[in-house]
Image (cartoon, rainbow, N blue to C red; front, side):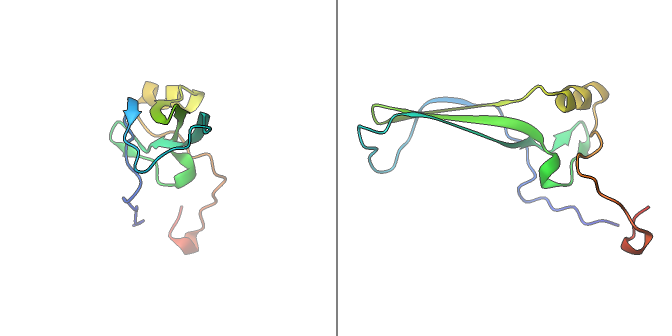
Amino acid sequence: MAIVPKVGFTQSPELEIDDVRVVGEIPDWVEGTLLRNGPGTFKVGNQRYRHWFDGLAMLHRFSIKSGKVSYSNKLLESLSYSWANYVLGVCNGSLPITFHKSDGGI
């Protein structure tokens, strides 16, 4: 039986925060937007993805202007996302993993 880690393999809700609390001070000359992507959810229906690279994608946006920070995120409605929600289950992982009988695989 495979051990499935649970730490970090969570759901990230979609959020929009207009004024993120900043500890310290952001210099006046700092202004712009940072986009970051990564896994946003590891669960579809009652099933879970079991590898970091297989989580459904989420974009994160941090915007800085006049010393204030805003944040929002959004799950990408990719082909994998659409298919997983259509079948209400986890699609095949994207990593080319081979299972060997010696590893307890198929």
